[in-house]
Image (cartoon, rainbow, N blue to C red; front, side, top):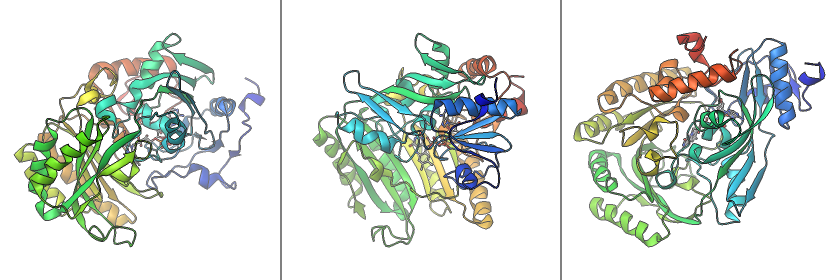
Length: 459
Ligand SMILES: Cc1cc2nc3c(=O)[nH]c(=O)nc-3n(C[C@H](O)[C@H](O)[C@H](O)COP(=O)(O)OP(=O)(O)OC[C@H]3O[C@@H](n4cnc5c(N)ncnc54)[C@H](O)[C@@H]3O)c2cc1C
């Protein structure tokens, strides 16, 4: 290894340098990190140099594209910031997209849409494609097409040795399996390739009801969603809106129930008919936003926040919306400090062969539960965390004990919870893969990073 090998062409920022603070700042302001160096990578060679620099200095390596999912702060390590590595290529013939490490779903959408194609983003197109896909990745098209990770065909990866390797079904098939949901701990992906899907328009939106009708809405939603074909994805949520002029008047400053849906079958009228069934069952909502949306722009369905903020969450996989589970949710949700308590319907292709690694592909749970609170002050942080602990205890009797990797944040990514995101067999396979590809635990600042130190699984 020469000195040259360890010098990136993109900026190498040390504490005190201009740009260091911006380079280490995660979207979720709760994920504060103090790296020894930040490399603003411009290309794969910079990523190679960053890994070699870290090795030369005896440090670990972290990677961040957007900071939506920074879970183990890169304290004292070399942080590879990939936000400048953007780029999208779509081959309309093979329907394969090739994206650079820092690309967000919003960057891919217009390029894919020009060919009548879409990827499988989640509720926010501001999230990075590589981070999202490395943790499974499920969104509004998931019940029809499965997890985003199941569609990965190839990747270029910088290994813990600082080598750039091509990964596909022929070269390093085991590593390909690990990249399809293994949580970003096997190497730094510099480009990712995956299949797209022919969807142009969807029928999607929300029906909002007063929170006082929570029990009725949850029961009607559970009955409505149970028999749905895979083309229909849906969720039910307690949702608190801020008192801002941009929020529609019926929701402004209020806690409400939202029933969300997205029909991605070719017959859009069939989706509208399904929504009509719920309108009939529940009567007029306070606001009805269902309509035809471009498949390339599904963000209005969840209207997730765009600007950076401090938030903390908790995720469980819920077996079913039984009357007892509904009782527990009503008691918790009706007076919570959270901005969102959402149950998303699982099933369909999320249980199919594309769900290769995440336990969502092997779970008996019908719903994922994702609870999120804002923590702008220490006091609000304490209130939200104490509420989330109460929620976890109350939901436990109705949950499988499993969880979903992508929803584990800086609080949630404990060794036990990360392990609970996998089946025991997948977990063991992943541990062996990490031992082979990263024996020195170079990529320790990932959701899997706390494992070795805490439970000694691989050393
Ligand atoms: C508002 C919001 C909405 C969300 N909605 C959904 C949703 O609907 N469905 C869903 O499944 N998830 C969802 N998530 C979770 C999201 O998918 C994860 O937080 C994901 O990790 C974010 O990836 P990122 O690259 O944007 O974030 P980052 O914080 O930049 O990266 C997160 C992690 O991904 C890994 N990673 C990133 N880049 C690389 C790379 N080049 N090589 C290897 N590993 C890498 C690293 O382990 C890194 O720590 C949401 C999160 C937020 C904040």
